[in-house]
Length: 213
Image (cartoon, rainbow, N blue to C red; front, side, top):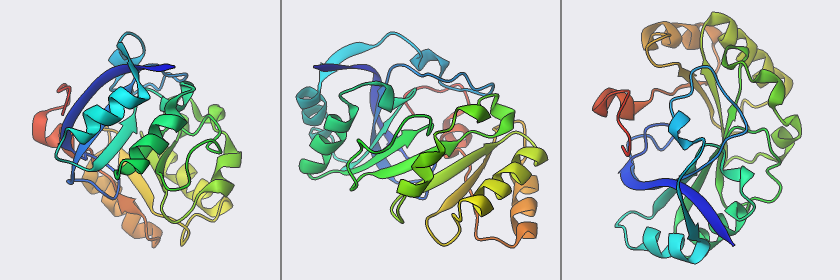
């Protein structure tokens, strides 16, 4: 079985607690959500078919052993769990970026699962699989992309309801060009919670339209 791959490239991690670290990116094609602020619309369709073995071999040909599997929504493809495990077995540190609408149970526990919990401003807040919250471990991360103050307040309620503080890193990511980092920082500080400001570094370095960065 093959996976449909949108693009692969080496760059710096733009988000997560590993922001700034060199990594190899595997962006898979397809997404079941349509967020209002989506910056990877080009990943909705197209791409090339590649086997798990070919993708692992390609990853190992790179100098970086940190690999991010992203999309789109990677878990839409049946072979994604096998890809994640194959990368782990090859000696890579593996992160998965997922929108959290599909079950995480098939994913190898050694993977760092970065779950993007969709706030109301995305237009997709009703699509979350909340059962995933109970599966998260300290190696995982939860991210809230906020479009405004009401999204931030909504995120705080989710954090409280699912008791995320102290369990794993909680990231607050302002929509680029819509919510200022300074304003978001002020909200985080006023909350008195150990939240992390999560800026999209790649957009500040290479610009918001750059691909393969």
